[in-house]
Amino acid sequence: MDWELMPLEGVGPLCFGMRVTEVAAVLLGMTEVRRFQADPSFPETLGVEFGTGPAEPAVYAYFVGGQLFCVAVDAVHGPQVTLWGRELTACVPADLERFLAHAHDCGVINVSYGPRGNPGANGLGLVVRVQEVAGGDVVTRPVMVGRAWADRCTDDWEGAIPECEWVGRQWTYPGHSEHWPPPGYTPNWNGWQPPRRMSAAGAGSSSTVRTRW
Image 1: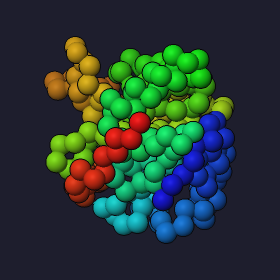
Image 2: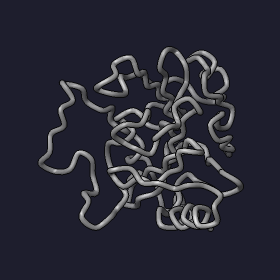
Image 3: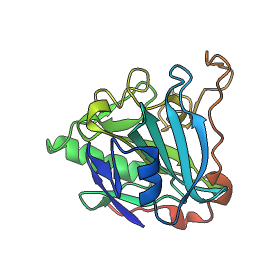
Image 4: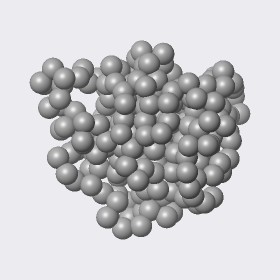
């Protein structure tokens, strides 16, 4: 399943601003798996997981005020998201980072990094996260937001992307922990816990990793 990213407007069949029922109607072959509070500081932020089964999450949709504002795609079971023909899902992180750096150097986009080291482009409403899959591989996981929420979206402290999307494996950089929260650190989440991701157990082989430039 291939989805084209239409920066700031939508991805695949999803358009930012949709209601939950509208999102469910266009995700053919998927069903709603669960709902959860997506952020400890903003209890009104609703996360809805869609998949082909309880252990096969494919798409995470986030709503505020009843409107879709953020979409994340699972690296194992989710659709292949493309931007200008370039695959964004389940890629080798270093390969995709080179693509972003090249586009930045050519003046096509302005790439920035958040405090936790995740690259993205506010002008596209795109952040590239990483996800650990079976076998210990780490591959890319695109997270996208709509126009009204794109300002500073790469900033994992002040941007609109919910906290649950920043939890887990991080990009590897010297001097930075590979996980958030880092070992020995307890965030002030006031009892909130991020939803447990189910996909790593069913990740399968290295065929999920895409290395095309």
